[in-house]
Length: 164
Image (spheres, rainbow, N blue to C red):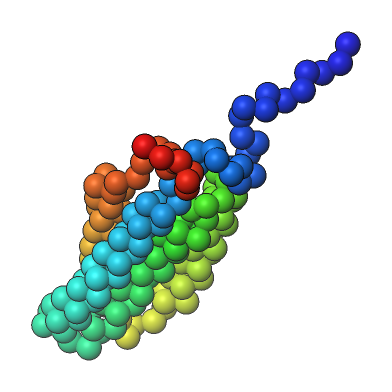
């Protein structure tokens, strides 16, 4: 007994759609991720400015350093996920998942090393750092959600050259 031939009507994963076939919308997906990235950068900049001002008012120079470190952590933590999604928007789900997992592992390793190095240092304020990180990361999560929820991504786009 032989195995049946693959069904020709179904696209094979990791292969581009053939000419004339409908395909997932790459441009619209990229637009959603670009919006999430732009909004995240604006948020982290605003959190950094507010954090530096409030940190200085409450704790002086250590508050400024805590806010700057916290903004950097929030930028790396939130930015790598959005950049990974943007870079792999046209890739297969397996590739996207592998890149996201790899980026997450690298982020966790960097955070552990950073916090181990900062543990004995006293030039920054820990409370300001934590508040800025939480504000940046939680705000970024909301902005990512909003970008995906309000993004207009069609299920498929008709291939070029097809009328109506």
